[in-house]
Amino acid sequence: MNKRHRRTLNSIFAQPISGNIKWRDVEALLRNLGAVLSERAGSRVGVFLEGRVIFFHRPHPSPNMDKGAIRDLRKFLQSVGVRP
Image 1: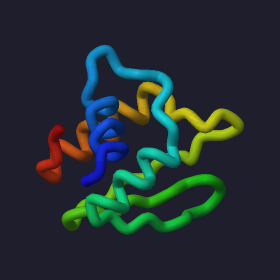
Image 2: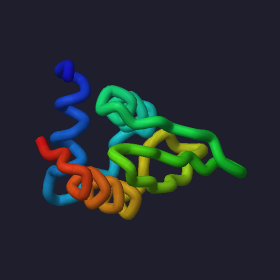
Image 3: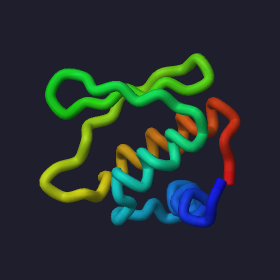
């Protein structure tokens, strides 16, 4: 995992939840962890990792994920054993 991915992972697990984590950085981190991302209807994205799946709404027009999505992502990553 490179420095950029580690920084993104630390941001996801930071308290309080950050409101300025970019979707493209999260997408790159997930791919680096071995996740498969698949486009769904509308702007939905399915994330498949370690036999688990979660769906996110690709943020627009802002590139930043909202705090609720970051919270859900944090829980998902913890459930598959990913921690900073």
